Amino acid sequence: MASVLRIAETGRLNIPMQIRNLVGLERGGQVSVWVEDGEIRVRPVRDVMAALQAEAADLFANTNESVDLFLAERREEAEREEQS
Image 1 (cartoon, rainbow, N blue to C red):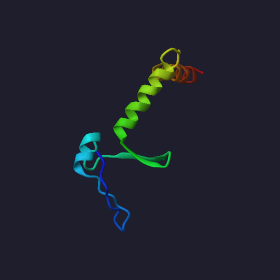
Image 2 (cartoon, one colour; image 1 turned 180 degrees about the vertical axis):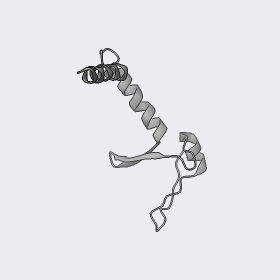
Image 3 (cartoon, rainbow, N blue to C red; image 1 turned 90 degrees about the vertical axis):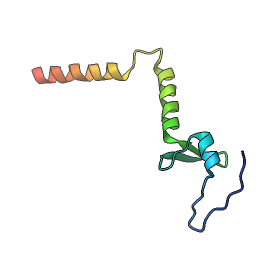
């Protein structure tokens, strides 16, 4: 779906409801905005976070590194410091 829109003098751009609905933009919801290859990209923050989490899960899938392991190591370290 393509639309021709007008940018207001204040710099605001109203995205039509049909387009917002297609990509899951909610009224009052947070979006991530960036420029890529000369285009302005807009995505819901929840989608960006989900993509980052999936990428991190893939990245650490075959390693012994994880948040749980990190926290366990920090707890052990804190216990050792308390005992000394």
